[in-house]
Image (cartoon, rainbow, N blue to C red):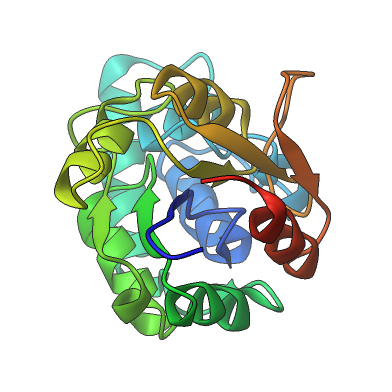
Length: 214
């Protein structure tokens, strides 16, 4: 397994951030006099970056109102983003086992990089990842962040896995020439896209990665 690369999504793959996102999401709605939404509804809006999330949370508002909603979201999320966000059961063990076995790990997420770094550190995972890219400039399904991680970890030729819970992860992974493992425990939507493996829990992901050819 020595020398393999695995790039992980963040929300819905490494961590369950749904409750903190819902807290900030409802703050955004309150800023434009909209009622709170239940967690289950907000979860369906997650996965395509904060701009899409704000648009889905605040339909049919003016551009000025949406700007106010976005400001409220960021003000609250910056304060609460580690309050209830936790790694999924088995994730810390998985990533540390992979690193110990010689894997190089990265994170490619549509979340802002500063938020991503704080969450990884708060969850005790930051030291496991050699390269981290956020959605500040480009966002999946654009494969740019994945290719940057491949370059930063000295793997310019396609080799390894993209691991995520959303159709954007699948599209970005394949566009970068990587195999894709879909995490069905997450928050996102596969949209019936083809993948090289499916895992219902991190232990299954460990088995899948262990049997794949580098």
